[in-house]
Image (tube, rainbow, N blue to C red):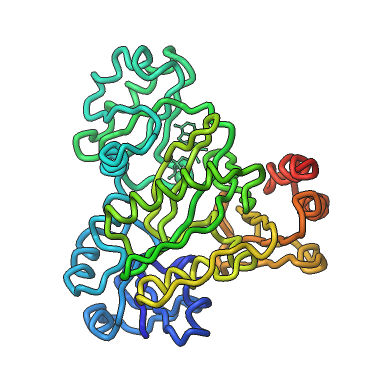
Length: 379
Ligand code: ATP
Ligand code: MG
C-alpha cells in the first residue's frame, strides 16, 4: 500500500514509522512547494504531484490547513481520507461550531464576529471573560485574543478593525472555568468500525500543549460514555475515515467540545508506547480500510512535549520505560521539537518519574512538569 500524506512535519514522520512494519509506504507532500518528499529525510522524491497522486492507494492529511486547491485536487482522485468536508470543518471554527450545534453537542457559548460593531455589549451576552479566536489558520494558541473584563473590549475593537472579518470571521467564546482539559482520540474505518483510546488529560501553557496523561486520572465510565457518544455522533455524521481528535473541557461532570482535529493529534503521542496500537498505526489502518487495532492502554502513560529546546542530556535515556522522540527540526522558540513518553504501573510511580526528569531539565522549557508531577503523586 502507498499512502501520500499532505504535510511533511512530525505527524507524517510518525505515520511513516508506524507504516513500515505493515508494508505501508508513506510519502509526504510539502504543501508549500507541492514536492513529494521522504517523511524523515525530507529529500524530494518527486516534483510531479499528479504522478504521485496516481501512484498512491490513499491520500490523507497530517494537518487541516492544507490549501483548498490542493485538497480539491486530492479529493477529485477519490482516494482522500478523511473526506474533504470533514477536513474543512476541522480547519474552520465557524463550520465546526455549526456542526456541534447541529448535533446538539455541548460547547462554549459563542458568537461569530464578522463586524466589529458586534463587540458592542458582548460581555453582557457572553460574560466578562471572553476568548476570541480567528476562525481559520490558528494553532498552538496563535490567532487568539483574550478579554478579562469589559474594559479590554475597546482595545480589541481597535485591533479587529484592521482585520478582514468578512473573509476570516472571529469566533468569540465564553471563557470556560473548566476543571481540566481532556481529549478523545478515536478512529473509524470505511466499514464503519470505531475504536477510541482512553481519555487523556492535557495540560496547556500559554495556549500550547505541554503534557498529556493517559488514561486521564479520576475518569469514570460516565465520562468515557459521554466522550464515546460525542465521538460516534461526529464520526458517523461526517462519514469520517481515519483518526479524529476531539479536544474537550470538563465542567463538573459535563464534557464540552473545544475543537476538532481531523487527524492524529499531539495528545495521542502517548499511545506510541502506552497502547496496544498507536494512533499512527490506527490512522493508517483506518484510511487503508484494514481492521483497527486495540486501543487498550498497556500501563499509565505521560507524554511530555519538548518545546523550544534541542538538548536534554541523557536523563530520559537513563530512566526505565521512558522513550525520547526527536523530530529532527531546527530549534526555534515555542517550536515543538520532540516528545518524551513515560510509562509506569501507577500514577504515583509516573509522578515520581516525571519529578526525576524535572530535576534534570531546564525549568523554563518545562514549566508544567514539576507541578503536574506533584499532583500525580496523590492519584
Ligand atoms: P491547538 O492547535 O494547539 O490545539 P488552538 O490554537 O487551535 O490550539 P484552542 O485549542 O481553541 O486553539 O485553544 C488553545 C487553548 O486555549 C485550549 O487548549 C485552552 O487551554 C484555552 N482555551 C481555548 N478556548 C477556551 C475557552 N473557551 N475557555 C477557556 N480556555 C480556552
Ligand atoms: Mg486546541
